[in-house]
Image 1 (tube, each protein chain N blue to C red):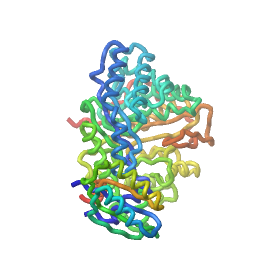
Image 2: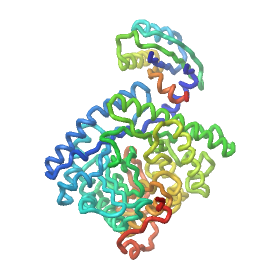
Image 3: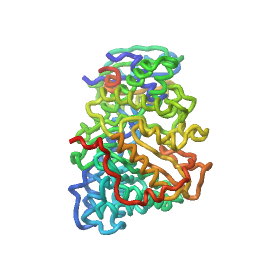
Image 4: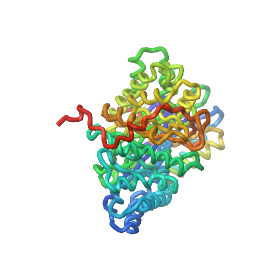
Length: 454
Length: 90
């Protein structure tokens, strides 16, 4: 039988160390909504999402109540809209209408975000893909909860440099379109290499075409729990350190697994995966950077940071895979800047640069995330940064992503406030040397030699 | 049988257990186990209970216990046992 010390441990994790289930994400296929008439298509999308997700928030809240564990977000991911809207949309404005439909239905069912305003263009773009991408600035500036993601490369296909170059411009245009809100639109736009089909985390969630009609994916979190556990093993060797992280990740993931199974049962929707990511929030103590400090660094960004993060990421996975029957999504440590107080402190102290963040993305689960850069950064430079990050993903056979926010009207030394879970960020300097001739070449970078495994 | 864990955390005072037990008895909730300890100076009590005999639903019991805790000056939480089982048992 459960003893009081175990109960106290669990409840201290929840109350003092910010243990939570970060998101229950309901994936919904919209392939059966396709129609060549735009009005009909929007109606179909609204009705299917509403019918499938109408009990999601209520069910999530009830599970949260019964187990005493916060479930912070309830979200929806849908089939990449470029596929769904291809037959009906003849212009970027047509696609933006679908975005507004998604926004409306997401608000009607009460979810925090809806992801899947996406296109998968890792090898080439269809006319529909291009129109969707061109509609992103309008779509994200005229909606509140719609998130967009574009997959521009993969280990199997190489990198679509035309798409990379286009996204450099689109990121900038989205920033311009939302400049009154400190370019917040860019916080809802992520560019991927090797995007997973079942990621429950925003802004990159979409419901892949390989998925079932509907599915429940759950993202767990708990950087604060890992940090507190590590406080008890200060000065011990790496074996003890790794064991501690593994055991803690196991416990965190088990809670996610329980919540996922309950949600699946109550909603009558199959369980997909648990994403075992350490996802920080701006709350004090809920920080991945603080874990790196607890491992032994003066600040995130110090020499040793990449090694410490690699170790952390790997141990989280090792602990987590035993705790869940199906693990997927991104699964690892997230290193967003604005959403992590420890990272913000490291940037402000001059310990952490964009280049070091790039190195860290080689060993963590995502990429350059929630980084504010000067609003006058050229499109081509943004495309260059995207290309670098995509290359890391392609060569290392891992997911990488870029979520940069060029804050229009602001420069290095200023800060930008996004509010809520998105936090605030100091604007980071960007290397000012040009890559124009490189990103303007056109075409694609071929798949790497180690992708030919047949 | 689905068990529920009730935890009471706060400053120790006379009659905490009595008042919680009275509420449970009046509601038809059977107590299977009680244990208590002091964690960082705070009174911590845990009860394992069986709610299958009560007419009240989980939310009502949780709300009423929370309110009772407010009256006594302690925090009372009601959680289904599975969360602890999941975390601490392989």
